[in-house]
Amino acid sequence: MHANKEKIESLTRELLQALGEDPNREGLRGTPRRVADALSFLTSGYRADPVKLINGAIFTQETNSMVIVKDIELYSLCEHHMLPFFGRCHIGYIPSGRVFGLSKLARLVDMYARRLQLQERLTEQISRSVMESIDAKGVGVMIEARHLCMMMRGVEKQNSVMVTSSVLGTFRDSVATREEFLALIGSRVA
Ligand SMILES: [Zn+2]
Image (cartoon, rainbow, N blue to C red):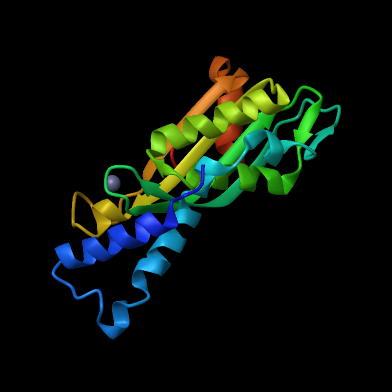
């Protein structure tokens, strides 16, 4: 499933006209192509294969300690306005014999973020994917993000950060595990 760049280019030309612009003026001549390239990249998560992405990056390790990866940069597009939301993702999990290579968690976040998303769904997709791919005992994911569709349009509080979390397995069942996760990611939100 490739993004149809030619179609996106012609639609962008129409969009510019509908906005009252002249798509032939010098500054806009290359815009449809650039928009097509950018949108294709920003939605490349639809066309990524999670199995391929994760394979080869899972290692055997006998540990029952919580693994935390903090402050993974996150850029996505809200599906309601196709405008960016961006922030940080924190992931914690308790392995049962298998752990992730460090950079792979960031790639996993990118794969789900590079789609039209809702922050809530993105958070859940990441936690479920981590849980399933290493059969973890428990997973916690928290995303803190700012939404340009709110900030630029002056809706609600301009600087508010939306926080979503998804907990599975022991993170859901045990208050102590959840508290350890929150303490380790240093969240100000309890
Ligand atoms: Zn939005």
